Image (cartoon, rainbow, N blue to C red; front, side, top):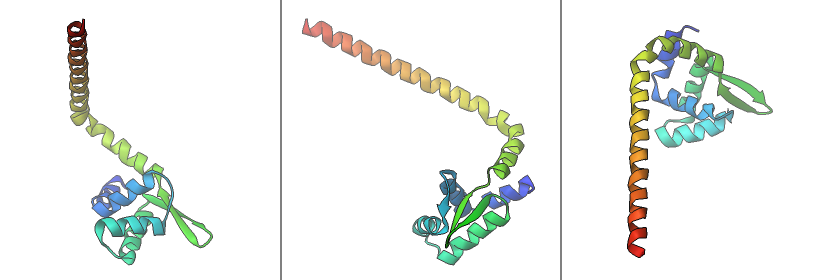
Length: 126
């Protein structure tokens, strides 16, 4: 499947949410439908149509289990998307690294302040 087509499919918030649900493991179509109906207020046929689009687009796979149909993420298609996105990571990776540095600095400063407060209360109690 062309990566651009995969990105088109992921442009829909319902389909993105379905993939998020499937990322945690296989789910029956009924389980997917229940969550999507609750969160988006769309009908069961509407959810089924989104599942069909994901399946036909290669982002999801389905396997029968008795009378049920179990859906899962097609990881190979997502790997193709990930490889395509690699050329763009340079735009956000340094920002995320800088954010992690700032978060670590804030945690360190908070520990130092808390430690200083503990030392002060120890001195007062003596």
